[in-house]
Length: 298
Figure 1: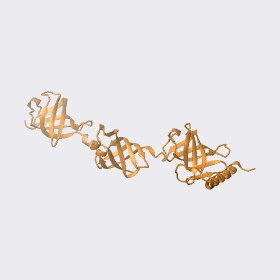
Figure 2: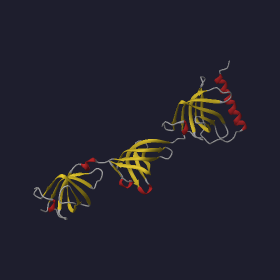
Figure 3: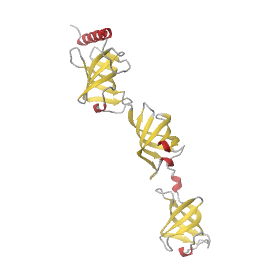
Figure 4: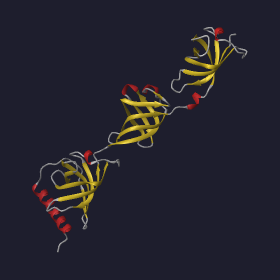
């Protein structure tokens, strides 16, 4: 008695020969398929073209050799079928569309003269966009084009990162603009979707490294531009070099004169040179919480 699988293989070879001899309707262009069927019914094929989808998990497909030689294959996705995108991200049967190209593993099911496959694994090579988290160093920035180029170990030294209007860029606790990113900035994490076919990463969230040393309290010195009150708490506007800072003095802050003796804010005059000790706020780099302020002009 002939092995059913051997008989099926013979019919498959004969069908392919007849199709090659008589011609067949043109099918969706794909690379030639590679097909393996073992005596125990194990099935493996590459470049399986989905022609039609029935429901959510039945795929009427073809394995092809050139434009005019093909064999019909029905691929059945079960609940336990492992379905992935081209580069390994998990997918579902709903993600598979007509004209997608599949790699299929499974077993032959019953069917007279028709290849029906109960699939154990399906890899959809047409699904080239996958969710990724990458990190790297900014190589260049183009705010006018809403993109930057990121050098990273995942996809190479020149990965284009595109930003949508909804993309969030975070640096420390601040949300910043693309124009605040500069060449050489480190990006510990960028979350989004990578398109392998275009080498383009569409970012939804970008985290830019924030140097925490700038928040360490230190001395500042500049010219007093304004003062909100003559008693604590009070707010001072001070020009330090080319930057203007809003300096917040809490109820317990120390107010001193140039001899480091206690003084009153009533003696502080716009234009005086003041020195203050405090830390820049992480939420706003132009704001400082000061513990001590001295007027060096009296």
